[in-house]
Length: 358
Image 1 (spheres, rainbow, N blue to C red):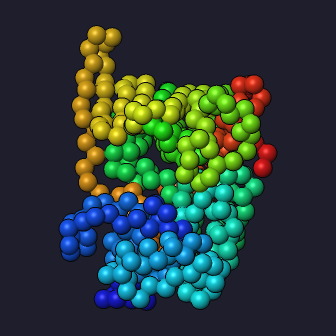
Image 2 (image 1 turned 30 degrees about the horizontal axis):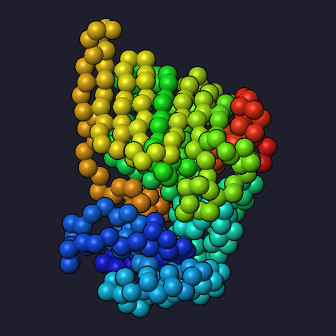
Image 3 (image 1 turned 90 degrees about the vertical axis):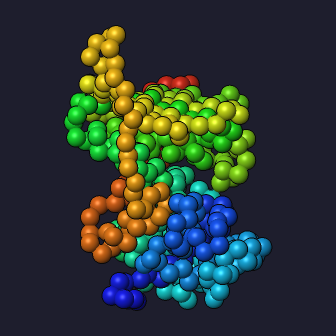
C-alpha cells in the first residue's frame, strides 16, 4: 500500500506482554508529535509513519481485551486472534513482531517466514533458547528471503551507536578488554543478561572462542533453559563469565540480583577507554599514569531509537537493501555465549570452546 507516494506496510503483533503491547501515559494528542520514545512494539508501530498495525495475537483473551481497550482511539478496527497461524493466513501481513516468551520464538518465526506475504520479522531477544531453534529460524527466513532482526534494543541506542562509531574510527586504538555489569532483581541470564552479552559482542567485533563461567548459587540444575519468559527472577540465574574472542579481546561479564538497579559497560582500548552506564557516557584518554582527560561521550539525537529504530531499520532495509545491525546470526552469537556459560558451570567452571554443537 502507498500513501502520498510513501509505501506503508501491514503489520501484526504476536504477544501482548509489557514489551509487546504497553502504552505509556502521555498528554492527549502528544504521542504523534513529541511523545516519549516508544517502549513497546505497539508504540513503535503507532509512531512509525510507514507501519499500519492491523491485528494482534495472544493466547490470553483478557490480554486481547485489555489491548483493545488501551488502544481503541488509535486502532478502533483492530482485529484480535488467539491463533497466530490463523492471523498470519487471514491478515497477509508484510511485517511481523514476535514478542512472546523466549522459548516460543522459534515456531512463530518459522511460521511467519513461511507465510507468503511476510517480508520482515522483528523478534524479541534472545533469538531462542537452543541453537537448534535459532538455526531453524535463520534457515527458514533465509530460504524465504525474509529479513530477521533480533531486538537487542541497545544496538539502536544513540549512546552505544556513537561508541561503536568511535571504536570503528580507530581513534582510541584496538579494543583490548570489555567489562560489562548488570544489577537488579531481574539480572537474569536470558531475561536481561542477553543485552549485556550482546553489547560485549557488538563492541568486541569478533567471534567468541571460549568461555569460563559460574552461575548463581543454587542453580546447578540449570543445564538448559527452564525460565518462564522472565516473569519470575527466581526462574533464571545470574552469572559471571570470562569470554575470550578470536581477535584477542578479553571480556568480563558480571550480573547480580540486587535491589540496587543499573548496568554499565567499560571498553578499554590501546589509547583510551569508553565508560557507559544507564546515566552517562565518558571518553577517557591518558597521557600518563597521573594525567587522564575525561570528556562526555556526546551521542546527539537520532530520529529513531531503540524499538522504533529496529522497526525503521527493517523498513529501510526492505526498501534500500543493506545489512541489519542485529540479524539472526548476531542473535545466535549471543545465545551461543549464554549456552556456553551454562555449559561451563555444568562442567565445574571449566573452559568451554566454541562453536558449540547445535
